[in-house]
Length: 309
Ligand code: ASP
Image (cartoon, rainbow, N blue to C red; front, side, top):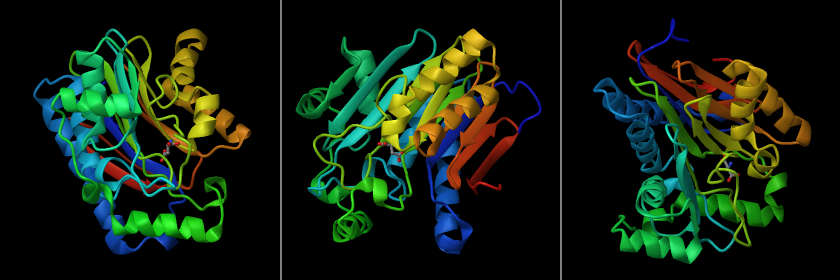
């Protein structure tokens, strides 16, 4: 952890889940760390020049969306029908402006579409065909099926189908990505982007794009991005609950995050959150074996995967 009150802070995650050293090859370990570090660099270079928390979380999220190792953008997991349904949300802590999309099929960087919803529409949350149409009208970069249709994701879907299991029974590695930042002006922002869960059906929506569940930013408390079994994170209203505990109970960010993750665990859910406060304190809390994660301040960048790091 940094000493105290850094002038800017960026915190990221690349998903939480069953992440144990024994299951990871040295190559995959190194590739994930490099991907996290590249995302930190993308956001930190903006913050170091006095850029906004909002720009930084978008830049970090785009970097992770472009990396096929993570379950967002290019690397998004596939639905039961073998299609891609992307969810993303972004929130600016200054005025609690927010934008979110769900069930988007062809946008290369859904986080930038969420930002366009926030800045270029009167709405907060767009879904499905309408969100795709809005993306096209806004000139947001689109990608073809083959961009998203990766062999690893197809294999994961086939394995799931072969087990005849629904996703609750599967030994999942969540790979959703997220970023929270505090800029030199003391403002916070949050971004979260995901393909959801392998084999999802019926237009299922997780917590990631739901403002207050997977994503929240409010200069009066903190910015939060979550990852994990989304149904439980929605039921616990995770991101807003952390902020509310800080505001109303006066808890510090770590205590608030730990309490809410314990609540998720009590309901039967797994996963974690990243949090940053307006003072620039980076916080991690998760009840899974590990969480792809990292943070950057003017003192440097740090990444980690396993629970004991
Ligand atoms: N929270 C995401 C969802 O339920 C999954 C994840 O974090 O990987 O859609």
